[in-house]
Structure formats: C-alpha cells, structure tokens
Length: 331
Image 1 (spheres, one colour):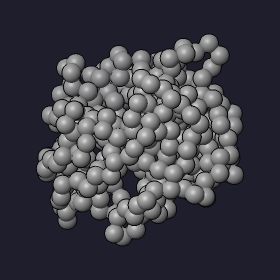
Image 2: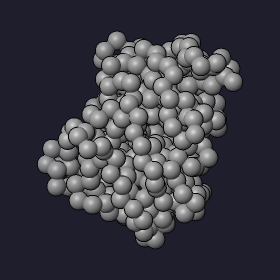
Image 3: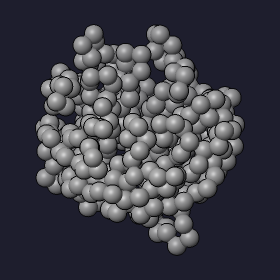
Image 4: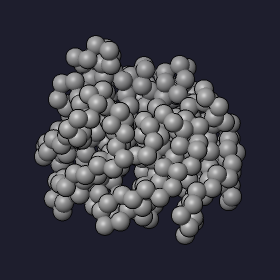
C-alpha cells in the first residue's frame, strides 16, 4: 500500500523547505520538495497543504497538491503574529498558532483553498512561573475538537487550554479556559471520542487526560512520560492518537523516546511503555493513516525514523535522512 507524506523543516541547515515522498513496501522514497523558509508545521486538508513559516514576522502559505504529490503555491498571507508553529483547518478557516507573540490568527479560505483575507488576531494575556519559558503567552497549538464545536488552543506560557466555541460564523469568544498545573506548559492536545481528550505538557513532561470540554472539563488522570533516569531537561513535543483511538503516542525530546499508552473504553490511559526514537530530538511523530506505522521526525540529527505498530508495540524498521525535520503529515 502506498502512503504519501509531507515533511516540514527548519531551513537553516541545508533544507530546501517542504519535502514530499512515498512510503511503500517498507521503504521511504523522497520524491520532491517545495522551497519555503522554516515551514515548521504543515497540515493537509483535502487536496491542499498549508504551511507555517516559523519566522519573526510570521507567514503562512497555501499549496495545491498535484496527483504526483508535487506542491504548487497558491498564495501567502501574514500569520497574524510572530513565530507561527502550528496550523489547522476547520469550517473554511485556517487557524494559526503564533508562539512568540502569544496570539491566534484566523484566516478565511476562498473557494480554491487559498488564503482569502488578512488574519483576524486573538491575543492572549498572562504568564506562568517559569521565567525563561512563561514570561508571556505562547500559543503552541489550535485544534478543533472531534465534534467541531470548539477550537482548543494550547498556551504554554499561561498554563491553559482555551476552548473557543465554534459555529458556522467562526470563533465565538470568550474562551472557556481549562487551567493545567502551574509551570506544566501545555503544548499539544489530541481529541478522542466521548469528549475525552489529552494534553502533553512540554515543561513537566506529563500527559493530562480529561473528559468534557471547556467549563465541563474534568481531569481524569495525570501521567508522567519519563523513565527513571531520563534527563531532567527532557521536554514533551508531539501528541497523537492512533486511527482507531486505542493508542496514545507522545514524543519526548532529551530522553529521545516515544511514549505509548493504551486508551481504555472509558478514555483512561494505561500500560505506559517507551521506545528509543533511533534519532535525536523527536520534534514530531505521527501514525500513518492506516495505523500500521509511526513516523518520527528527529530534528537533532536530520532523519526520519519509522516504526511498525505490532500488537501495541513499536518496532524500528527504517530511517531516511531529511535535513532538520520538524513535522510529518499524510495526504
């Protein structure tokens, strides 16, 4: 079975920008690239790809995906802030997380999937106890809930996940705020069924499991993601649910591990086990659409590592050099 994938990168160490390729019969083949500056996060929606250029004066770009996977630029637009690090699509809108300026950008899409308007900007306020990392808001991810009735915004700087109601007219502020523990630094969330959801905290290396959104959220569990003896400077990076919702995956930088939990019928987590990423600084990791493999973007040493998912375990099968990879997504 052929699986097409896209890789975002930082471009300061020889990367061309966005790479695309094919995974087939246990082998990865890079088939092309598109020039871009620091396209650190990507998302695919239908036959369009959107990229955040993580620069001081942030930019996002929309691309048309050809049948062979090649990308053609449609247009670019301001991200509405500095250092955009995440993009998502819902209801004809692109949501952009601007890390350095602590703001969410909302951009309307046109009929062709292009960026139709300058961003509407929603700025956060506040700070956290970590003077180096939480001196101000730092929006790290904005992701629609499974049902599409909220946009959940993880703000590492203020220790909160802000749930903005969503309807056909877009966001409807004010947000309903779920506060994490002080200094935890929520980075990425993942949404399952029955309003169960999970958030990976970058600074505390914990996964928090909740049921209910916004004002209805109840904390079910707090799960550590480190092994005894892992480096104290380790930090959480990516959080993903498997296609069937039965596995939760987190990538941990410093420890250079993939942490894997079983997800129970009630949404609770159990059976934590760890797997070596076979590379340095795993900034992103994701299940293939069929759930048979995990791709891991090891930013530190410029390689994509691939693992087979077998009976709830991860088995290393392949590695491919890609300069400074930061994100992987599938068409």
